Image 1 (cartoon, rainbow, N blue to C red):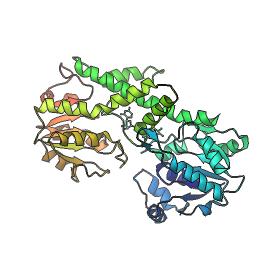
Image 2 (image 1 turned 45 degrees about the vertical axis):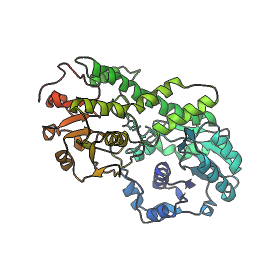
Image 3 (image 1 turned 30 degrees about the vertical axis):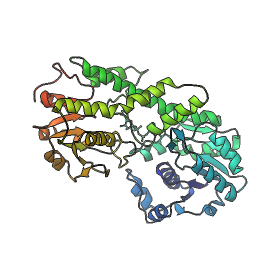
Image 4 (image 1 turned 90 degrees about the vertical axis):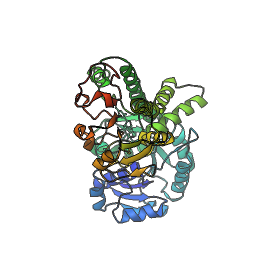
Length: 413
Ligand code: UDX
């Protein structure tokens, strides 16, 4: 098929690259001239495993000019949908829809891939004057290509059978189950899924808080045993500093405000947001208590990306930990294998970061932060992502999310 993709951010670029890899003719459009030029030189605007290899094959045409989409059968809208003042901001989506309406053939189909509140795709249909399909994306950063090649399910929401069939055919190569839904169901599935996972993370984080207040209790054990129940499943039960990234924080906020405007409070989603907002403060309090004050103390933060295998720091909890520590007068030095930040002085090596500081906070679970127990000797340590082995740490100088503050859970390393 001839496919257009509007918006070459995370979702748009990965969609374009994967479809081109599957022998479709793909044109990618973005309003950002600089980004388009970078892509034409096969340079990715972000770090994502596997993207450089696909870019190097050079199969997608990149342009800022919508008229390049005149011949496509399908045009994806994959522009960003930020949450501004608690509400979803949809201007990019509608301006893309309007531009598509001016260039697409009459029988072309507009496919909404951006995460949008229910009712948006219907309006996109009106604005563009074309048939519309909602085809939400569930890819995770760091695993984006694999998730696009092998999704757990493909959701195709449409009231037009033939338009839906066309999108279904496009994703046939995945071999994944396809679920046909209404436009609004497809839009809500995305929010319901992300919100549920956010609730799961906040739930285990509250259990972690409780474990800390009990003797001989480790949330890792509690989560592992909970996850053995097939009804619960082991995923998204990793306690830590909380969820960040470009999706969970903005989507939970957008859907709870959207629901409230319709007279329905999503109490569990709102609670998940609140629990998450308290994570950095709790971590800093714990560190302050252990160190007997933070003013003038030098603290090393290991990891600023919102999760490993990405250089993305959007809504990263690590950044909030850094801001809170600096607000308390601490001096912060950071290290991350990929991500960059201006929030604090950044050094190029993990060992230098540790060496320079009196205390170490693990804020992202990069592989290279595992097994470093010995190099942390003599430092105060707060393991915000549970990567260290507590039995190898000296409990007088060590705290970890979800690990008893007292009791004999671990040895005296
Ligand atoms: C998420 C969804 O998984 C994906 O389906 C959707 O399309 C976009 O949003 P992503 O933001 O890339 O993907 O990250 P994800 O791996 O889901 O993690 C989200 C956040 O939750 C991260 O900050 C992660 O550290 C945190 N998390 C996740 C936990 O704290 N504990 C867990 O058990 C799982």
